[in-house]
Length: 289
Image (cartoon, rainbow, N blue to C red):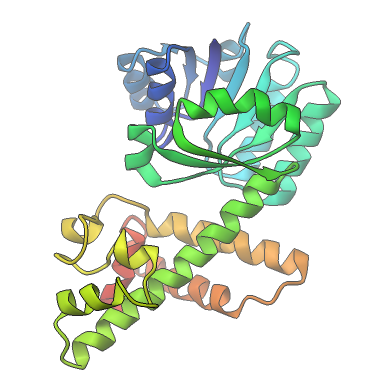
């Protein structure tokens, strides 16, 4: 299949490479020359603009920084330029309202489109083991799934337009709040004189068990390998966690939902990133507790 891929950053670069490995012809574009060069080395055909990249393709996949850029790229460079039967797949994490607006514009121009944000981080993007949360019609999801299967291990239809973004926002609000709770729990255990490995062995088999503890432990040398074992470098940057928490707070406000733990997580990560820790893995917030 001929697939255009727009946005070849830390996540998109690995995703595009995996589409090539899955046997697709990938027509890639990014504003950064280094990203273009990496895509070329991964077997992608590269182009100087998004409108060039989408010429003659059967699908367009994007991984972009924010909703403003997503809307601009699709309304200016993709819709009306890609062939009308092309399937549009946006894997960026953006606000629900923008996702719905872009999908409405695509539908009006007779394109099938899904919002398909991801979970798993850079390592999963490179390994092709991402989880996709997909919003869109049944028809669009059925068309998108074989493509997404080439980049991930789990592809779940969350509902209609915008549902993928809603699921991602809710998931990451839970992740941010649970990471902070996990960090403060380990600090309390330490102050109470518990050996942290022993505490991990207990809590990971007890009712306090959670993903932040057992798969991404914020304590160096405890649990499986994680960014904590690398000075909190790599993984999921705190600035990105803050971005997702802000999206969650915006969605909660629009929906009239009360989310006190989410609000506190946003404030703590805002303070953490403002102190110069935006590129530090989000589990590094343990160093402030």
